[in-house]
Structures are given as structure tokens and as C-alpha cells.
Length: 538
Image (cartoon, rainbow, N blue to C red; front, side, top):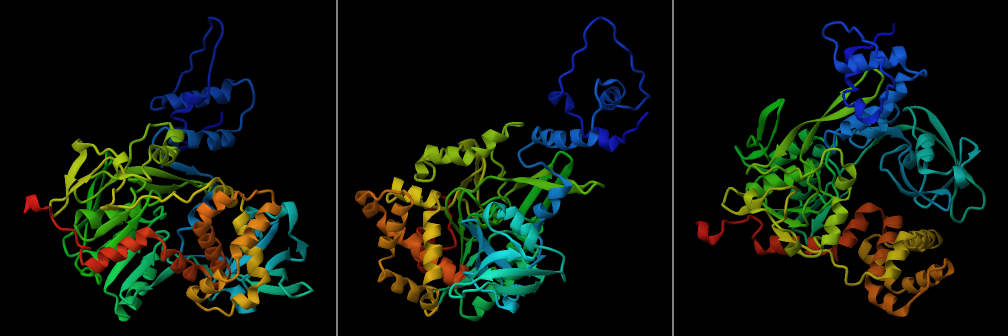
């Protein structure tokens, strides 16, 4: 008789939810089970001994484990062995590859950027190059998919890959032999000074190297005379708790609470700043939106509750569940929720959810949009029973996510069906890619986004795009184009800036017309970045 370990059998606690069993007739066989064996053990033994067909336990495990965890909460997850490396890669400090960023357009890999210090930069690959062959095998057409491209380009450090490159202006393919190396995963791709006074740092994730990148960026900008910080965590879905604690410690004074966690099987654990922070006195603004989650919300929550700075933007996602990883012997893993996050005032960050209803949870952002939350703060109804006080007596609310101190609505006045289709069909991306390639030499003569944007304004880029879109079947209603003209031009320019000058200049350009960044500068200029207690509480 085949035996199963208790660990394996415990995975089937909720198996009865997914397997229907019917026994006909009035004859039942009594199974004698040794003492200490659970009902699940008994079921599995019964299935093994008596089930009508042969069954694969491995297949049952792979299909059942995700369903079991779904019955717990939205963030407890099972990761099959084949997916574990990819699931962890975004938060690791580096991966082994050739050091490029790319997009797939018209069934071909287009290199959009070269990672500084990587193998591709060393051999001379350039933005705009097209990868046509990989290891002497044609890699265009239907086979050219993102996952397959990643599989072929990544590989163990020290191994070689041969690329056949089509470069604008060259008649023949160029061959490059590249030795794969360690490629750092950057969490901070943009930091710079605004008006010579305000540091702007965009943090994309909280990964292994994020704190080091943040510290270096801030140190450089303090050296340049930085008088205040705009910390942008919009769209940052979180990452490692420890990294968020390190960053918060740099911003807070000794004894300030950062966060506490607690669960039924996890005793309350409180994290405090130790006073060693190098940036604890600098005026601070944190930018958030509905994509700011988990570690991002810890930063926003502690800054708000300690009255350390001003939160600007829109309500955050509302992920306040702590996951702990556990790997199995077969290389698979689970991330099991063990506790909840709470801000210093006692607010639970986690938004409400119904166990087992992952679809409802996933639709929350869509529901917010449809309720008008992105456009009006009045559409957000706070629960007075979940009111809390910051250190200086300001009222803040629990119930899920961090509500900003200053709400900035999403401006949709210039959104038209024409603009929506131009973006959703990828036409803007296609056109700007082609334009960047055809004009790469002349575009390369402009070293800053200001210079390039001024140049593009004289080139009737929008007219060229409208003709291109029409050739792809998108009609050009003049009223809609007139209404969306400014946003269309900004999107076209920003894409071309990204294609030719990289991410930093791209972000610097779009921040010039970003209302959230504009408000952050205004708050810093006013000297009111440190929120004060309301007058009636003094």
C-alpha cells in the first residue's frame, strides 16, 4: 500500500470542495484507520485503494493547491516549481542575461534600451537594433513571443549567445557574440533635481537592491543642494518588508513607529525607527495611486501617521497582508499569509475581501473607477467607525489603503474614442518606433528632453501619426483629434524621447505636465510639507 507523508496529505484539507463523491446502494465498506490519521488521510487512502481509475497524485496536487489557498485570502498563493524562479526574479538583486530592454513589434524583437555596464553595451548593441536570429536560428514571426524571447536570451552566467542584428542603415545583418553576465535589476530608474532644489525619486519596487539605490540617489542629490524630497511610489506593488523598513528608518526620527504586524499565530511585532536616519529632517512628499501596494503603503502610512510629510495623489491599493514563503522539496513554494500590517495609528491597510471570491477582489480597481473615485474625492465614503488620529491629531481613516492628504483627480477631459483606440491598438507605439528608427541619427543630436521636445514640435509629428493611423484603419474625426491634440502630442513626444534618450529623460519630460508632481513642488515651495494639527485640537 502506497504511503503519503502528513505534509502531502495536509494539502488536501479542502479537497472535498472540489471532488464530488457518490456511492450507490446500501453496502458501505468500513475503513479501519490507524489512530492519529486525519479525515483527509483517510480520504486519500480511500482514493488510492478504491478509486475506479488510476490517478496521478502530482497532478491533483498542482490543480488543488491553488484552490486551497484561494479559500484563505487573495494573497496566499501557490507557485509551481517551473514558475518559481520567474516569480522571484523581479525582487532579486540581479539576473543572468545579456543586458537589454526590448519590445516585440511586428513579430520582431526591438531593442529599446541597453543596460549600463552589461554585456550588450560592451559589445556595442544599440537602442533601435532588431534581433533577427538567435544562435543562427531565425527568430521572427509567430515564434517571436515574449516568454520565448526571454528564455533564449537569458541563461547561466558565462554562457554565450550569438545574435544576428538588423541595424538601421546597414544592408547586412550584424553578428554579435555576447557572453551572458549578471544584470542588476534596478528599482530606481529615475532620480534627478527639480529646479535645483527638490529631489525626485521614482521607486518601482522594493527589491534586494532598492535601499542601496535609494541611499546613493539621495546622497548624490543632497550633495547637489537638495532641500526636499518627492518620493514617487505610484504603481509600486511592493516587495520586501525589510527594505521598506530600512527606507522608512532613513526618513523618521528615533522612536517613531514604522509599522506593526499581527496574526492569530503571529504575536504582535512592532518596528520603530532607531534615529540613525540620514534624511529624517528633510521636507518630504510621497506620491501614491491605486497601484501603490504593500511596502509602498507602509511608507505612505508611517509618513502620514507620524505627520512626517504630505501624501499626494489617489487612494492606495489596500494590500495589508503579510506573506511568508515556504519552499517544498520538489522546488515549488507557497506564499502563505501569516499576519496583517497596521500603521502607527492602528489602521489596518488591508481592504475588505470575501474568501474564495478572487474575481470580486480583482475587480475592485475597476469598481473604484466606475464609482468615480479616480475623478472625485467626494465619491469615497469614509467609515467614521474607522477614524484614527495621527500624532498631531489629524483624522485619518482605516478600511483599506491610504487616503492621500491632497487628492489629485485623474483628468479625462481630453480623452476621446480616437485617443483610446490609438493607444489600445498599439498604433502610437508602432508609429513612434518607426519614426525613431528612421530619424535616429538626427534625433541623437539632441541630448536633453527639452531640446528633443522643442525639435519635435517643429516636425508635425501629429499629422504624420494621423496619416499612419488612417492607413491602419483608424479614422480621423477632426473634432476628436482637436480635443485630444495636446495629450496625443505629449504621448508621441514622450515615446520618441524614451526610444532615443532612455527612461530618465522620458520621466523628466512627462513630469513637466504631471499634475501630481506639480502639486508636490507647490507644497514644497510653500514650506507646508510637514502637516500640522487642526486648529481646534491645539
